[in-house]
Length: 483
Image (cartoon, rainbow, N blue to C red; front, top):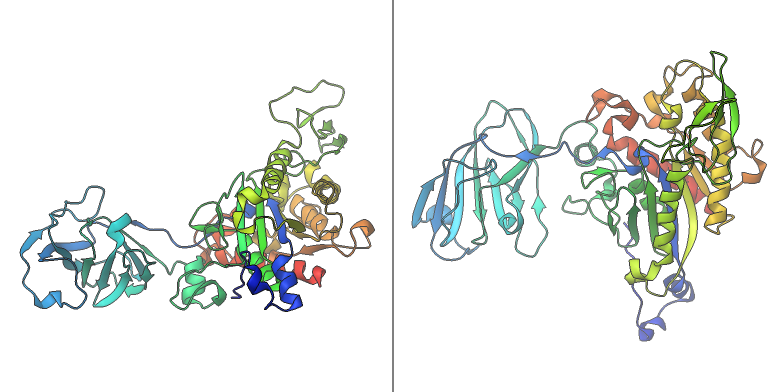
């Protein structure tokens, strides 16, 4: 991982830089705007999740030793001043510890499923502890430092010893644990399968970049140096992770990823770009409908009738998402004080969406939103460039890739939307977009449910490898256009 200085340098240090380095240090921050629906929000699972520990821990006994914790002492060879058999250890209300010295809990552990596990002792200051399972250190966190954590393989039919040594007097029996070998989670893909090694440091921890900042608005609202946890929650990722590493490696200047996205939204209605006009579409039953243009307050209505207005309108999600992005940029120095007075430039756009318009519907005849998708997408590209005053900023479109495209019938909504997404990157079909729009086919990155954390096709089964590969491919396409 490249590490670059991103904070303003003292004038005295400036004279030591080469011309190229000086330019990079002073150049505006490169801003990439990422948008779309739930898969852009980010549903890739980091782990299989954790749960409170409880009856997996057998006959726990708390021993209290005189004085504060001293790493030079061998507490296993010492006589405690007090011992307490813990009737409840873990769960929601663990038995309180007496305090008054160095506290250590020992006992046996037996998991219910064979697998590879991680352990998280306590909350807050209680996490300042050293935990051993089967004689191996699985957790070590000193006060004021990051935890060092190691996973361990455990068999369901075998009891093993455990020991938790608390380094401060703020300790309790709360704890969490979880499997890390569930197929398709980021921890499994990285730590067990050895993929995407650039995501972790020398101690096996997911490591933030120091030259790429992530800011999410509307959803996925993390505000941090790029790392895991920039998806729908702290235990999820979207394509921003792979994308950010690709563009971060390319630029000498620092990078801001500004993601504005919302799940369950269509391009044909919710994200309808400004200036989009009404159109007619005749359904298979022969009924002709008028479909909404921008700001219309009905999605569609039968031709010859008056629309029934709603509180939503065509393009409302477009307005909410991109107005939020504009607000961030309008207050750039306030939002990013580490780049005070440096300024920014829009370096590119990314779009990953299509499910709500019918992108998973691989059977039957394409609907109106799928048929209109190519026109709407081309307009989206043009309008975003206009509104963000970046007429030549490269634009990357990631296609729908549900089920790897298997079973998509010709003329179905899924096939039609995929064709539209690929078409905007075709200079023959869209000469106005030639040279600075690239389409990324995501179908090869699909992983089936048996290789994934869950069975949920429209979220690519939560498979983190899929999200990483999509992000990397979008990043490579962006970099290629910028060379």
